[in-house]
Structure formats: structure tokens, C-alpha cells
Length: 262
Image (cartoon, rainbow, N blue to C red; front, side, top):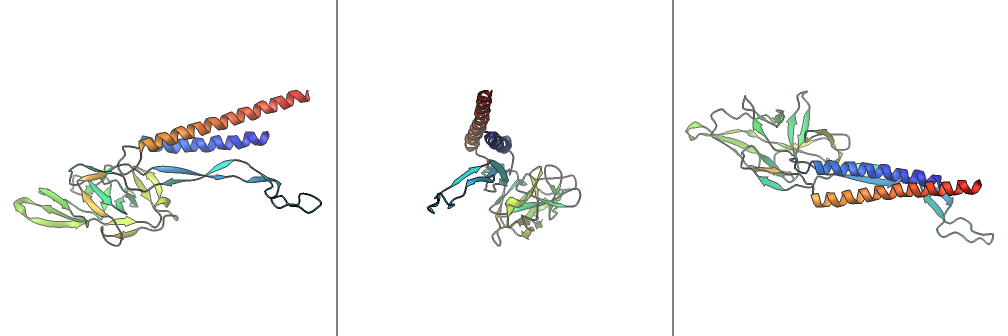
């Protein structure tokens, strides 16, 4: 019975984490470029009361299955699911999407490079293309003050139409990819940094060597499905409740056993 108490407690702890992850998904349903999380679990060690194949009698018969009692569950990981979100048309020339694999490169204030799927960009007072937080998009591209229109092709070529109808190439958007995007470290603000698990960034031009192409005038929305998350939330809540009932049942059994001893 004491074993049941601790086993059910591990279940409550696991489902609490599960609900935390689901709640974060739901809260970011309208976050540009957000990638939903998914909690994964593993069973804990087993108590071997009778091992499978052990001798069952003096005649040499063997137990076909034995008795192995599990001791609960633990969180194994929280994966980021990098499936593509839906695209929303904005007609803002600096709103960009990556249609396929890849991440935009962002220079942080400390000089480090972070990566994002959030293509909500604008220009600062110097004409440089920046994120909503004012961080520079890499490689750096400056839009002239007299630019009348900015065009970004699927291969990332950035050009501007200036006064007098003169068209000039301003630069090239390059994107990064990783062997294991799920291994990236979350920084918040829709940014990621590489880890030993993700591997180093592989930089290239859009629409080349398996990298995605650039879409202009649109944004990639969150890949969270509210219907799926609500179903998962209800399932997680019910699992939490059932584990709490298992603790209550084990406690009542202990009380009954103690009353018999008296």
C-alpha cells in the first residue's frame, strides 16, 4: 500500500508537468512562429517479486511471466514539434516566412546569434532590418531611406525600388538549419540557440540544398491546434484526478489495516 502511494504520487507529478506544457501551448496559440511542446514519459524501475522464467516448483517448472510491479512514471523529455504552422497574409513587405526547413538568423545584443521562425521584421532608424525587439537580422541588410518598395524573392534576394524607379539589390537573406531542431534551447521571445543535441547551424541560401524558400508579405502562425490541446488538457486533468484517487484509496486501505491491528 505504501508502494501505491508513492507510485500514484509520481503519476500526479508527471501529469502536472503535462498540464504545464499544454497550458504553455494554449497560451501561445496566437504567437507568431511558435512551436508546440509535447511531454514524454518513461516508466520507473520495477520491483521483481518473482522473475519471469524462475523456478516455480521442485519439479523444475518455470514461471511464464513472473510478478513485476512498476514503481511509477517520470518525465523523460519535452519535445518541440517543428511542424509548419499555417501562413497568414499580411501584405507587409518585411513580413517573411520560411516555407520548409530553416530559421532566420538574429544577432543578440551580446553578439551571439539566435534563430527564429518568427519573420515579423521592420526597419530601425538607420534602415537596418530588425526584429520586434530591435535585434538585427543577419546577414545585415540596410533599406535606403528613399526606397519606395522592397522586394524579397523566394531565394532570399532583397532588392529595393528607389526614387526614379531605380532598382538595386540590397543583400541576401540567409537561413540556418540543424540536424536536430528539437534539440535547440529556448531563449524566449521566439528565439532559439543551438546545443550539443541540435548540432551546429548549417547556413545557406533559401531554396537551395533542402532549405525552405522565402515567402514575402505573410507570417507563419503557431502550429498549436486548440482542439487537440483541449483534448490533451482534459485527458491530463483526468489522469491527475485518477492518480489522486489512487492515493486516497491506498490511504483508506492503510487506515483499514491499522484498525485491524488495534
